[in-house]
Image (cartoon, rainbow, N blue to C red):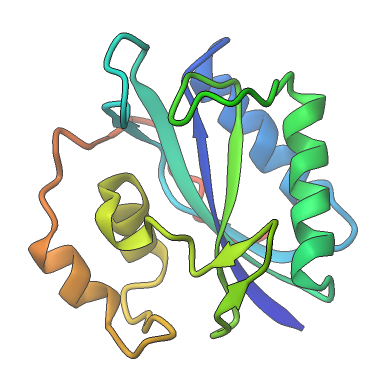
Length: 168
């Protein structure tokens, strides 16, 4: 089985409900097992600031799917929740599911880059990851803790009543 970490983010159409719905889709997906989800966090948008704040979380699960098949399944969940893919980078969205880590592999294909290219610069990924995997070591040998120690929180705030860390 492959151990996967994904980032979840939304800032349109009730973002907290979007993430809750996405977590439910992950819980009930037949190819995803042992789901653990961080708390939900409020974060400022990357890029254009003329959009609503985001709600973010990180999830870990195991799967037998290969990386691109996993990407297809995650994009299907995004589409079911109204995601419209535009060329606008860092624009508003109903749901974004990003593969952050896939085992300890480094992957570079036309469709997929793992570890996610912005993982270490994004407080809305690093701090939720620290919550569910504080001992995590990245494929290049860097510890997640060493990344978190140097990264400002930029207003990242845990949202109340979103403790979803239970295993499913």
